[in-house]
Image (cartoon, rainbow, N blue to C red; front, side):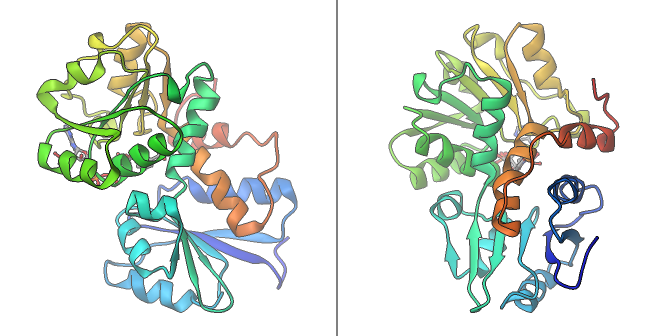
Length: 284
Ligand code: NAP
């Protein structure tokens, strides 16, 4: 039951119709018995600022922010967290009654939660990590990995200049390498993380020299449509442990839910099963 006192939160992005976040948050709300609701918003490019300004002061409690508005979300906030500043983007906005807009980035937390869930043997501090890509998702991942204790993060990108810019922002533990040196980046890597949009929607033609990774190297793909991307299939064929992007999506939703509704998601709700069903994937 949603009463007149319901806490309202939502997700803003474009397109938004296929977002899994409303299903995940509303399943948790129902199971937790919280008087709250989570709804989607899809403003046009110029409508994002108007939408957020309209909520200033607490018309709703908060928003998750997805593409293409994550950088704009950071820019509009009055109080960005360290994680949001390091990532250069925000995926959570909380509207305080005094008019402050507090921004956070929970993608890094989501990434680390996904590793804990699907590769619990992996130790972030045990050796270098290779990150493919130098866009917003890569920047958040590199910042979170360094903050969590990774001794070195090797950023491999098709456009080397973008990797160099990213590394310049994140300090001496990050190194930039061109795509042609991916195999060098994979040597001794404890994990390889795909933070590019290559492999999206099953589009392969995405050449990654996975055989250069050590046997225990965990291969993670942020892309989750399809769940078994070409990269994850190739990793499994080589016997490498894998982590999928859906687990990261669920992982970033946990601290978002806590920020909006003031309680942790209840245990025992099969949000992964719900999301798999929505994606048309087998739940087994
Ligand atoms: P972005 O800022 O647009 O960056 C895209 C990156 O992909 C760039 O580094 C680009 O390289 C690279 N790229 C694109 N196509 C490529 C190809 N065919 N070969 C090699 N590199 C290619 O995007 P983003 O926001 O960082 O997001 C990246 C991906 O992460 C998206 O698929 C997004 O959906 C996913 N993501 C998932 C989660 C989750 O919770 N699972 C969270 C955040 C993001 P150039 O610099 O050379 O153009």
